[in-house]
Image 1: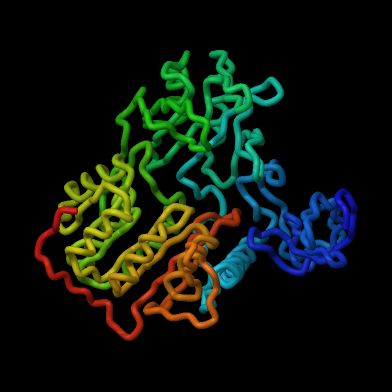
Image 2: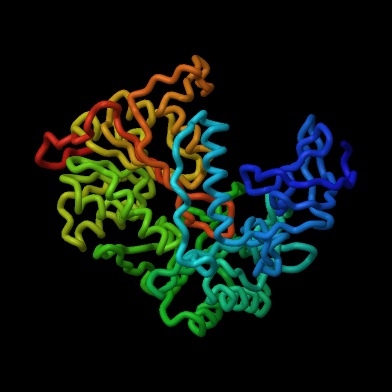
Length: 475
């Protein structure tokens, strides 16, 4: 098998990213957008050992579940990977990918419930994040191509609501009229890097990420936004760094209130420019309800708690709840949420989970710990702490099956840590935890991403964990 060779293959299954997998002689080819059972002519792009990567040149026999993508730039943009697959088959695929990933990486074999569907297949996202750059002498506004920082320009995005198309047009018009350039990562020139928009109950928080603290014509941009959004707040965010981080540390409010209230399950919460929220409101509701149903009474700790909505929901069921969040703005929002809703048995704790959780476990008999980390997963020190303290119930939420497999394997004993800190599969797992539930949720339709809920309980013991203190302890 050689690079640039054309071969005819039949896909035998899916890879962990939703790509087709086919055999060509002794080489296993991974081919984006090819579905199982499809016969296609494929161009080989790369070969390494017995594995290769290719792209479709012609589909000879299409699969029944193949549909026409709604997005005109679907095959070039890196935002979605599954628009070419019928939605009910996307759900089956995600369940299968999760099962295969847990087994392959973590050695975890357990029953997995069917993926919970989203009420909306398109237009579901409450957050829009666009890259703004300079390519071939022109401004580019859109999304990055797969595994690159090359921007695929677009005027619309079907997985976002209709307002996104108007927002893109306003940004492009503003930059043209005011002579502003998108950011060029090579020359480090240009004024506009990103735009991030969050919708909260028909109100909008708009953050323009720039390389300068003063932007020419910003009032004109505010005027254009006012033609689109009845109520909005506009921030400038300064980001002069070289990392992949979208936002810098400095926010400056240009117009509007700055934050807005939302409500869920009878709880009023506040969202600011850097507050984390799940992007799919309807699926978030289903997920949070299942999390609350999965915890025991007594004392609970909500780790990576964001603005405190889930913490407040847990407080309705538990004796006391601590919410640990490292972002000061989000932790402050959680404090306001507790005060606004009169929730006296909820405490917001600002700091790193690996530090604050240890202090709480020293002072409290904790019944349940909820873990909802970023894509990188849970810190090893946190997992070790939970096992050492013999927490009765662990509820895990993950948006990354690979890091979930690693963390779950460590907790359930299918992965063991070597002296060098490496995790390796073991044939004789010993653990105090067993899996009660693995439930995927389709938080991100049309994409390969999977949100997963896992419930673990201590073997042979009830995780009642009634709190032995009557008041919160300083942590």
